[in-house]
Image (cartoon, rainbow, N blue to C red; front, side, top):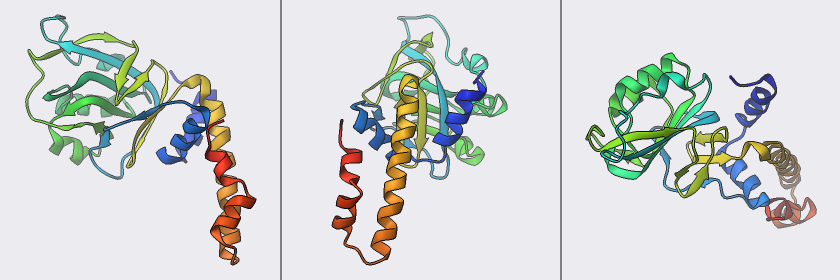
Length: 220
């Protein structure tokens, strides 16, 4: 269950986009941008703590797929690490419907999904390397839940905060969330001043210099 304090921070984070969050992470020297993970459709977003699931090739583990889904807390983002495999799926139509019923915030896959027609029709927030119709049954299997995983070159830990939108997916260490929000607020304030100055006739480069915009985005 998400605490009221954390929920308030997540609600604020929902008002920003992944480029805003990415700039803040760059400033802090944190690599949280998941390369190659894209939205299945525009107009959907997912923001919330992550529930991680690690998959391994079938034969290395005996657990079936999808047995974790009813354990995902409401408001969490499911993050599946299927080792980047694109030859078989780890998510489909039934899982989508159960996730919606359980009020899961969305799904991020280091791999692919299937049953795209259902996911699109239900407007479920899905972010992955792509889609492919072949089942993961007898090809990959659930190895562990709530363990560190890798997605798009990022190390992702249980309870990290996922932010996913049209521009991609980013992960914020929960211990850095306050700093990230403060940096985003500072950039927003500077951008408002720059926009006002430019609208009043000032050159953009001069406005950026006066309000120290480049310094706000530069690694500390």
